[in-house]
Image (cartoon, rainbow, N blue to C red; front, side, top):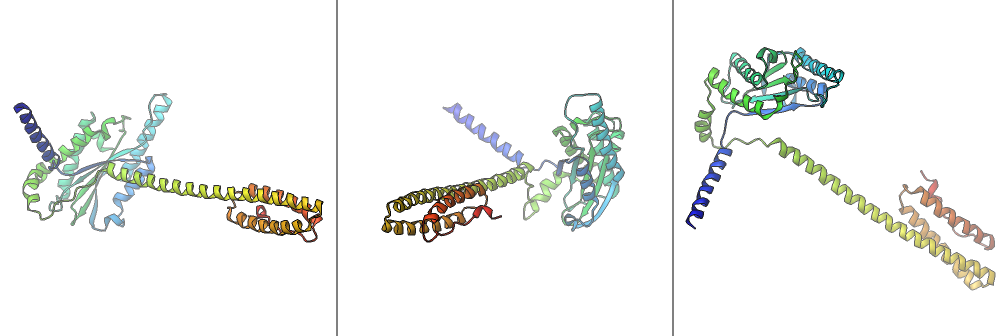
Length: 345
């Protein structure tokens, strides 16, 4: 009994420690995102990074290109195309490279604003650690790297670092979008800001954040955003399915009513023809008026059936009109007309 209570106590302490560790700041914010849609997605990303008129850049005071240019982005795409071509020619197994680059976004709080030289040193430091994590030389990575600085007074400065997946020597960087490289970039960014700018994230966490009146908003994980979009799509499809099911049910009910009216028309027509043969004037008069009323009901029913059933309308009108011609040949006054709904567009 005593041991079980101790075990529960230590378990609570462990869970509390995990909670604190999970909700504690572990370094500066670094976001990793794979650039999709091949060369088109890469070109769109380059246009976004350097577009001063974009709606997201209203509060951006300056956009500065620290490393690479548009040519660098072209080289990234060309190297991937060359790698895929060589793979096809050599008949190698495995999928081709679909995403051409990985983008790392290095963010700092608004109270810190390093100089351009300091930002350049930070980028070079991060590239060295990325190259080390991918088992290549740093000089091979610089030729396929693009760094753009966005300076913002309200939200803080940040760097967009684009790194291609294939080097000049046709080496595919498999680790680039793995977690080991992301962790290396985070550690490298923390060390570089402390080394070149004297900015320590531990000091920011322990002293700056505690003095804030309001806590910083946490960014929503990408999987939650994707899950929300997927749920919205599923919910929309579900409501569409329910609506379609209701429409089918209504159409089915209308077709059942139509079949009953046709059976009623056939029975009344047989009675009318039999009355003519028996020369029963009272029954002829009676069934004649019943048939006219049934034809009016048929017209109303056919109007409610959608135009997506032209074959059904054509079959109904043909069968009714054949019997109607037989009755009109014997009757003094013709029956009401059944409208040709199948001829409508």
